[in-house]
Image 1 (cartoon, protein in one colour):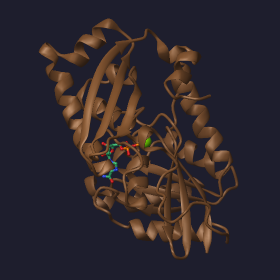
Image 2: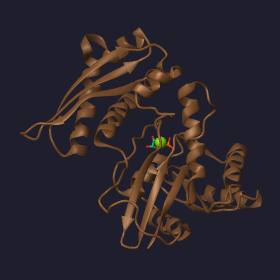
Image 3: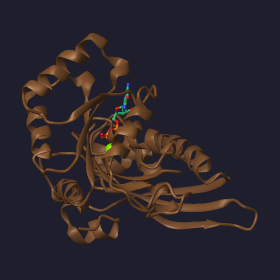
Image 4: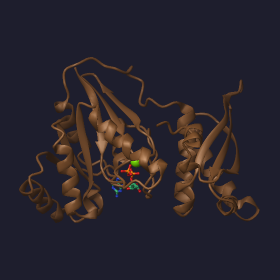
Length: 293
Ligand SMILES: Nc1nc2c(ncn2[C@@H]2O[C@H](COP(=O)(O)OP(=O)(O)O)[C@@H](O)[C@H]2O)c(=O)[nH]1
Ligand SMILES: [Mg+2]
């Protein structure tokens, strides 16, 4: 039996959360085309007869701009120090820059076993892959590179086997049926945030926090969920709600569908929008919204 922790590192939007969801086989982290989708470290657990791989999803690499992104960067760096191996995720279809190479070298220098997942190969010309791999080796990036597509499921099991081979012999840490360290309540708030990320322009979702006030299953099996969408500005609140509440109704209906899928039961969802100015710069409010330093 091999088991261990793997930090999943890479730039914002590289495809880290999507890749973890595919490796684990269930949705443990939300995904959107916008950066700053993942704010927290989330563990995704893959268990098979001969292996348990615990993936630590990270918020990605940012230049810190406010207390929230600053915390997100620290979360990424702390995670990388505390693991058995690193999976560096590179968005192959976005091209290979000097900055990408410098980042890969930074993580290679930690002297932990490291692999590079070169992802999104489903949306790029195949002939661009070999030159990039050659360039990486010429530039001295000392890690095996696995071209994969999380969306199309290409090469995923080969990547999994390669990761497994990097891990030490050891026993399971989590029970077989656990796929994430996060609670259902956390996932509910994340699903709400995902739909907001998908529906509104980026200024809005980046300033939004979700507070779940009620989360309970009634005797008839229906979940009663009440949550607040906290935003930073009065005009953001107006945009979130929309004309006659149309936008909010749509985004809540969209979130409710996913919550029902995730919980396997009917959901009765009520949503309110509240304003708390500049909560992302206020440590106390960040803590209240679940972002712990
Ligand atoms: N075509 C394609 N898109 C992908 C793939 N992996 C991720 N994406 C998309 O890339 C965007 C960012 O993905 P996400 O997992 O949130 O990136 P993260 O910020 O690194 O966690 C989302 O729109 C995903 O749907 C892939 O293998 N192929
Ligand atoms: Mg992510």
